[in-house]
Amino acid sequence: MFSPHDHRLPMSFTVKLNDWWCDCGHFQVVRLPCHHVIVVCSFSHIDLTTYTHPIYSLYNINKAYEIQFHPVRNKEYWSIYTGPNFIPDPNMRHKVRGRPPTNRIHNEMDEPNPNRRNKCSYCRNKGHHRGNCPYRQ
Image 1 (cartoon, helix red, strand yellow):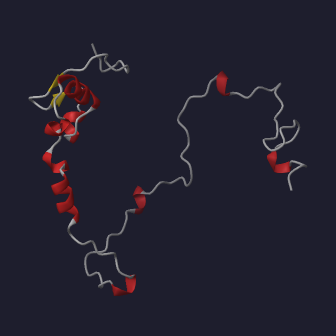
Image 2 (tube, one colour):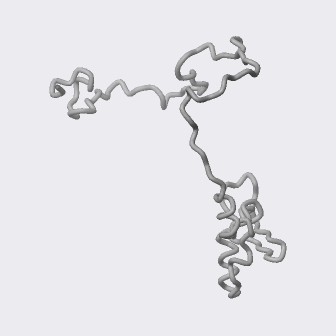
Image 3 (cartoon, one colour):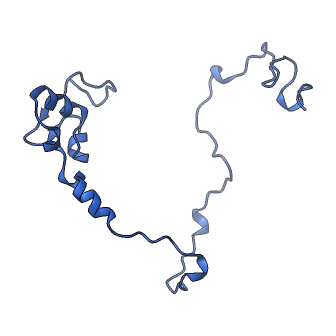
């Protein structure tokens, strides 16, 4: 059994090959066999390519790439834009620059231990920090 509130995965999945359906949902969405379908096909000695959507065939892939792609030319060759100019609303901008403030409620776990002396992350000695380490050049 699988509950939406339980984050553990179910131990068994239902696969319906005739409907191209699997409990995991990957088979329906991507139209490629998920590992549950692969296990069922290998156990039943069924060719896996029969359950791969035709859009993934070599013919369709070659057809998609037969069009020649042109690189974007240099900016001086671009035509002049004559469409509307969009101006962003200044009221929608964030007021605070940089990292947004945290909304978390701090408890005693977040308070630093006053008995613990800081160690330098460069030389691992106590009494100073990386910024004023005497061993750092």
